[in-house]
Length: 618
Image 1 (cartoon, one colour):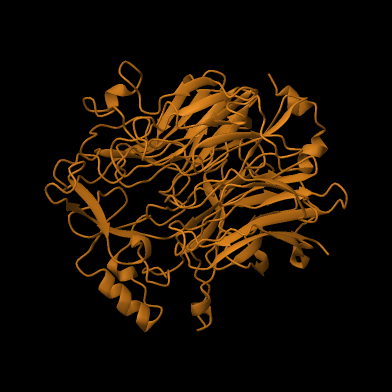
Image 2 (cartoon, one colour; image 1 turned 135 degrees about the vertical axis):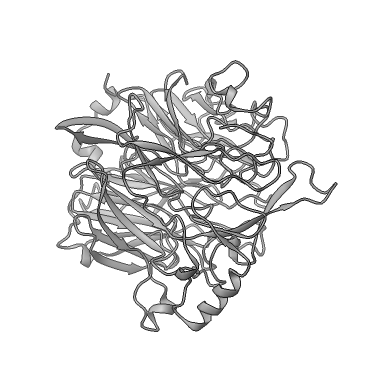
């Protein structure tokens, strides 16, 4: 049964807006707009900008800001969330503020980052609401006309998301950093949970009534006694297990009534000696009946994760063609660089997946799973290993630094457990591919994936007796920013490229093209060709033939030809745009805009900003 609410709206109206975080409920990140196209994109200019006024570099406040939001544009209004979790309504053609709502989070309390990726729109045809979650674990329902909380929802407009999942762990982190998913009258929520200790707040995915806030269903991401998958946990290691949450974005097939969950690693994320087994539903793509939370099918992309290789991105609900037949599919990108493609109804892989033997762990008590799944197609979009011969020699200074960094370290392939000696692995715990995910062009069945070639160098150390009895071994990295495999200026220690944009033909499972994504100004200034950079945030693709992406650690916003991968337009941002763009048509001007949050910072640079920028044609 098709979604009747969408059928009530003219198709051309939906095409002009950006009603979901990923453009549509299935996260294609595609727009049929083509006013901006290959012929004129080079003339794009800044139309307006909006400053949130929210910048923290971690010096005054304990936590740093990252501006990762993608806005909604509905009925001529833009809805933007900020790092401090305000929700701001803007005129999408001028940037003028209409109203804002401030949940007044406690900014003195430490958290991972000040972050909010966006909100969700709901309507039953009469009532309209904006839903979004906060770092202090509140789910808010706001009137989109005024920004006022809906008094009928929960406790005067919000519900406490910690209730029922974090009661036993009052001092442990539980937050909502990504927008909820909407299905009919349900608001379906994942969460960010602490994963530093084995036990902690539950990562269960829950659905709440959009009108009242009452709990409708709850899916146990770590199966309990008697439930399917519980036997993949040794003994009672499943009890109160943290992690295995959905901190990223969920997808909804409204026509079929299915919600898709990208789940993460169980805690602790780098040691699993106390949770022997495959550990369902860790690192699994799970399809649930959206109305009830009943499991329909699942696929585990990593068994017994001990690398923190979460499923970080929204599943892309797409269609592919096989033997002349159109098949509803779901593509899941991963931190490891693999792209898994399934029939979205049955869960059947659309490309073969092989279970291959991998290395054992040398850490006492650890029991790595003996095999891991490798999709035969498409090829991985990121580096999965390196050799000493591939060390960075672009400058004498880089060669000297990187040579010292690898002294005494072992270079290992993907899925080698972190060892008792320093171990160099690719990708790092941030991927590969991260929460920015992929965009999909339905005209050519092409998936566009940005990736970063960043490794990490870690070793497992036994904890001193009496100091930390929760787990006997913890990981420790070498002294580079975030223990990544780079120098103090965030320049990787292997040969480039370090950032790529890849176009994948999902009918064939082959690459159409690959383009270097990003530049290091300090190197291009010395005559070195573009190398690519670390990148966080994703792309969108349009019928105008354009792939728009910021993401890179070089404060640029770019447009690529979707057919060839040629870079057609580049502009400098006030700070790196670690977010995914959106595009829409202005109701008054009838002009197409493309927008990006430029907040910089995050874990990848020290330039912070607070500007949200819109571009249009002259």
